Length: 156
Image 1 (cartoon, rainbow, N blue to C red):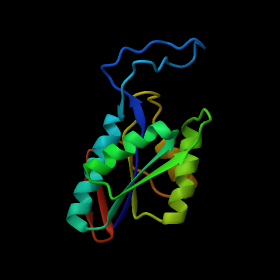
Image 2: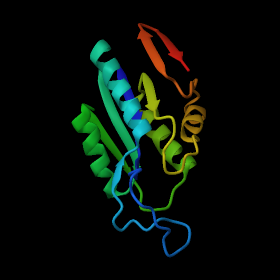
Image 3: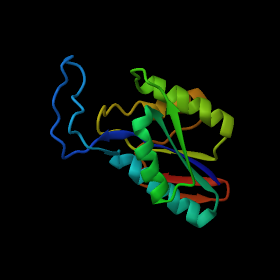
């Protein structure tokens, strides 16, 4: 089973956030960044499914070179592959989903996992965009999943 897991780099929830000088972004000095906790749950579930059914888990993220640390954490957790779609531009949920969709269209994963939402932007838009771009069904906020042969049972 080929499993793709989208992950993101977010400020640690214990970090004191200061608004940047532009009034729109955060001042990243002295900010610790972590793997988004909801994405970590998705990655853990993907790894459990891999353990049960075999296959590979690929973690993917969109961003700059600082995201490499987040991908290393995913590899340390047990992901088989890590993909960084590099950009230095400002980006939004649409951009992230579009780039992940382009990668997924080339690699044809059996299932794609995403965390419930990112704790920084908190928009829950990437899963819907991604499903639309790939013309795939979508189940959000899944609390339990079971995969048997060609059947997926998701509880929300």
